[in-house]
Amino acid sequence: MYLTIKETAEYLSLPESYIESLVQKKKIRAVHDGEQYLLFRDQFNQHLEQMEKMKRQLAEYLSEPIPEDIDVKDED
Image (cartoon, rainbow, N blue to C red; front, top):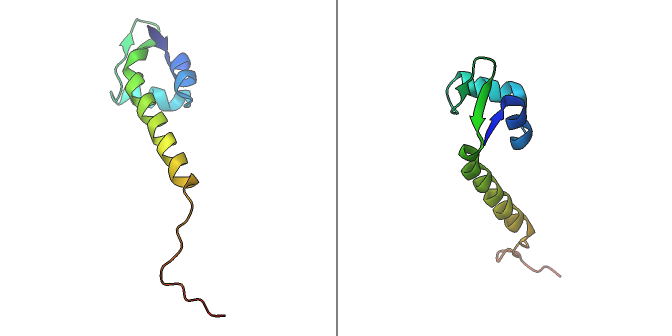
């Protein structure tokens, strides 16, 4: 399925100007139909999967309790 730049920006939750700059720099593949650029949606699936994986890993890391320092001296 092909998306316009506006639809792609909404799909990726990024600004349209950023998507346009990536297209102009040829960082992402796009087809120009004479009026607008069209981007193949499936090329972003791996990116979105990696972002979700990183979010889960960060959430797990932040939820871990801080271990007690073995060098702490009990000074009562």
